[in-house]
Figure (cartoon, rainbow, N blue to C red):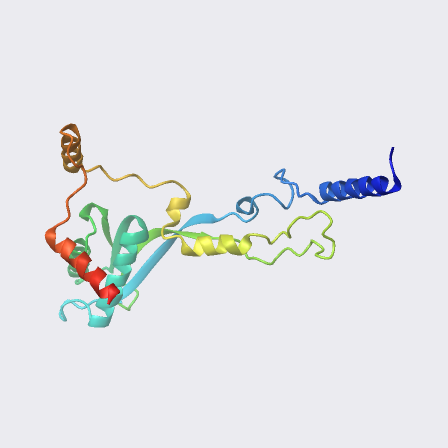
Length: 229
């Protein structure tokens, strides 16, 4: 037989379950609980990057500061550039010297010669050489633009429209090569020599891992002794 206390307990439990089901968030892809990656997508677009440097054939090319800027620019190309890198010189008597100078410097820094494009343009008067390449840039729409949700009304238990935007911004800023967000990189070729060595050891029942050199073991022991002291 139901007592008054049992009825009160049952009524409280039912009210709690009903309240919990009403407050449960939904994630059907249409509401605010949709994936922040879909709400604030990272756009990856190509961008042209260039540097213009003075060149003098009679002064042996570049001044030290300009040479440093050139080295940094080429390093960025090797890390994140896509496709070819171009050398554009003002048309005139020094065009061939400038193109040859920068072409050799690019090759010496590791740029394949078949990725170096050269050309001339009408002289604008400054005589500068332009080095340029295409790269990819990642960006997200500005955060904090949609304040349509009333934060005082949280009965639906859903986050505001700006949820996840700052995280997406941080990812876009930190990714080393935005091309990785479009498609995965190609894997490097395997080390056939090492593979054959490991397979040979395995077939003979020998240890497959590489043995550490005596000097490496001595360095580890020295490090352990120093940490103990």
